[in-house]
Amino acid sequence: MSSKEFGGYKRIVQYFWDPEPKNDDPSNSPIWCLGQRYDPQSRQEIDKSTTNQGREESEPLATTEQTIPRLDKPESTWVNGETQGPGSQTVPPSEHGAWPSDFLDDFESRIWMTYRFGFPSIRRSEDHKATASMTFAVRLRSQLVDQGGALSRDYQEMNLKVYINGDGADVYEDSLLSMATADGGHFTPILILVGIRLGIDCVTPAYWEPLKAALQLPQSVGIAGGRPSSSHYFVGHQADNFFFLDPHQPRQALARRNDVTEYSKADIDSCHNRRLRRLPLQEMDPSMLIGFLIRDKGDWDDWRRRVTEVQGKPVVHVADTEPAAIGQNVERAGAVDEVETLDDDEGDGEMIERPI
Image 1 (cartoon, rainbow, N blue to C red):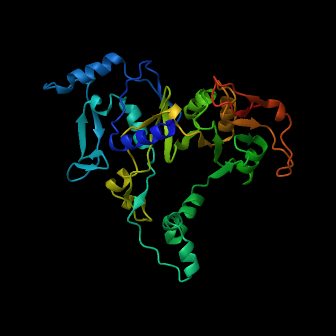
Image 2 (image 1 turned 45 degrees about the vertical axis):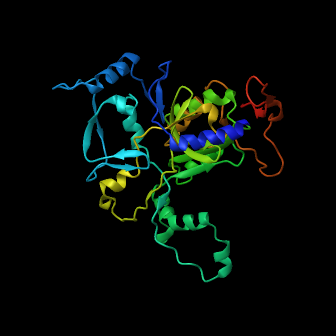
Image 3 (image 1 turned 180 degrees about the vertical axis):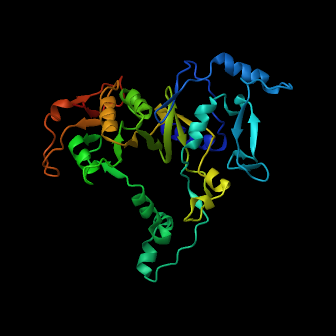
């Protein structure tokens, strides 16, 4: 059986048997979630919480129990492999893998972007050609932007600009600052999106440390990537394991409301998830989109310094100026001299570009 076939069978097994990961890293490595560091509980604390889980005492131990919010529903339900129940319940840490509660709170606060169902039907076009060529994905996107271009309007209200460069991992300071300060010199927050491929079949080990460092930066907004044929949103890591939110658990579509206070607690809770999932770095697909949010000039200076100080092969290259002749087969000065080959011990042996 080839490694590709084995990986396919493994994913099928994981689909039906997907236990929640435990905080059992032997190195007791720190936990990171979009720039925030959390120290894992010591092995002694984990063992103690597990030992005391079944105790019947009049006063619960502060070190073994914590309050974890649950969905406010009339009765406990089992939805897509996850327990959801009423109110706030006291749950021992061992039930959630003995992870630090502050880390779980941070993870749960992140927006869980999932597939949705139950959208209003879209009227078929009277043009039979348009109807015949419309794919399911097109129809789904049409549903998302229905009702007056809601997504576009929300995007404009955010007053956020997006910087993405067709050259991949290169970010040019002059172009970015020009975009950020185009409105009267005031720095408008800007989202940097870096689309890269860090290997052939898997992420080359030379990029492991810089990739982990990307999630440790205070400007990080996560990584859109996943494993082959399965997309995920990575928001943190512990050692070589990456934590992610999985969009493949459909939720009921939410009606658009002009007043956000009209959304119920159940509506809001459907956009969040406390259930951890993690993926070993060696199983990640090498193609990904990394995002960073730069809020002001000081934030930019801090981000640029940090990305150039990482260990290993940087996944982002920052240059002062953008080449003048874009699209005219003119490459950045010195680019050829900066190309090197990784040997077999370091990864896939592909050609990479050494940053300036």
